[in-house]
Image (tube, rainbow, N blue to C red; front, side, top):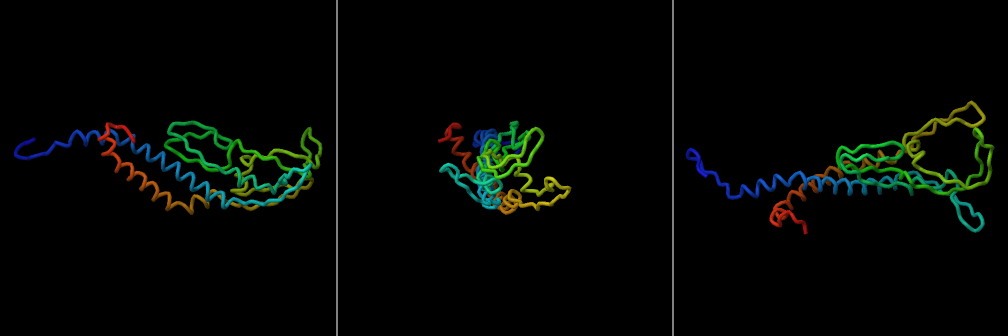
Length: 204
């Protein structure tokens, strides 16, 4: 094409337009893949940093973990990816994903049967000793992460239980790796565009 003495080569214009048209879809795939890989990395690090005190007892030939020393929190840590616009119950509250997002923490459905030596009385519940119960780390993982103030039963005393964070350190220690991973996945997807266009949009 020649306009006012200026030559412009438009022989590859069709391919260029096709590339721009497919860019959002291909980048979306890269972001999803990045979120999936990042979630796995953070999950592995969080598991290694989560506090785990283990103690067991045998009852009728079966071994059970003790309440407070079960290691359930470490075992429950999981990661899942949410697509943009999704609404899902994460932990004990709903989350909306604005983009592909990886959520790491205690799995909502995970539970473990443990042995309890003593259970303080509550309303309509008498004191109980030596029984089995299910614990769900999702109920207390945030308390371990951030710390809390515990009231000593039967007294007016309160004790500050210090935080033992495992999620925040896992995220912070992998921050640079997450940034590099994002760049690598986006670049890899962009590099694939010419082949995807040449195949008519069909991925092999």
